[in-house]
Image (tube, rainbow, N blue to C red; front, top):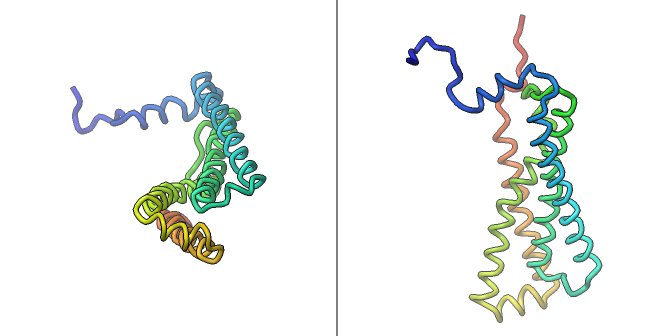
Length: 180
């Protein structure tokens, strides 16, 4: 029977933390971190390949291709979260304090937040292309100035959103030190 004074973990996250917090090197954690790290490396190589091919090919300069490249760049930097996790687990620390975690993760978090709006921008770009093909062709694809303005507008919105999301995630008490 579970009563209110029972200090047992209430969810699986607590159970994992209590099991591995002082365990040192753990085969289970190392195995899962290694698998995720290997997939992250493969993903980074693939993302870098898409960026390289798009830069080298002059035919892949439309707005949609540039948005895909931006998405790949964001994915590339987000995959560093798995490198950070792998590095922490392989040392046997397993868990780090929030004050150390946040500076390590701020850039990957920014890029994953950017990816959310990039997916939306990709979808809207395709929708505009289908709904208004002539307008998109004349004002964005064939117009260098229109294409640059269009992409500048999209990237500005994405950077503002990702920046605000990251900044709003900072708890003001996170940086406060108690006065003794």
